[in-house]
Image (cartoon, rainbow, N blue to C red; front, side, top):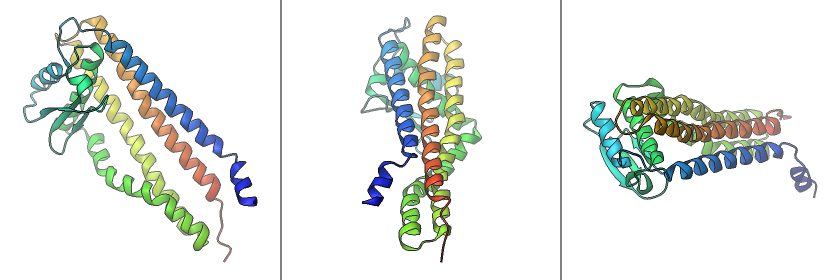
Length: 235
């Protein structure tokens, strides 16, 4: 009975709650902001697909294919196969929000073209970050329950820290893509000045989700350090 009670009253659980609140608030904010400006039809009448095609062409990018994919706000740029994938709600919509999202993904295509080094660094980190985050807890549990080894515990914590490293590297990549998107739209016929201001609000809300993800991962890492970092091998 002691272990369940100790787990229930573990004060570090508040870090988990804080992380959930941050993630939930960021998700609510980006969705509500997108819905608000998704109701505003652009004066140019351009759709997300039209905007993406215009931006890629203007940037001298001719080897990227624009695809329509299922989902809502599942938009992404894939540098491996040179595809810009727009969700149905973005691709077909003529709203200010849709054009902003499409422009953001085009920002990633421009990053790829100019070899923006944080983007290349993030791509290189992905495999080890995924491996580290999936193996971290099993390694820590083996260190605590079976081997009683602080070395294994530290290895597990270090493995989980790779997930935080990925989140931190993601921040400048996403911020830069949004900045490129706004700059491109500001000098294009796709949106007027007041519509660009709306796009900034949409992209700022989206950026906060990445900040929240980084903070949440940091809190999870902090919790692991508090719970297991002070363990010592008594053998």
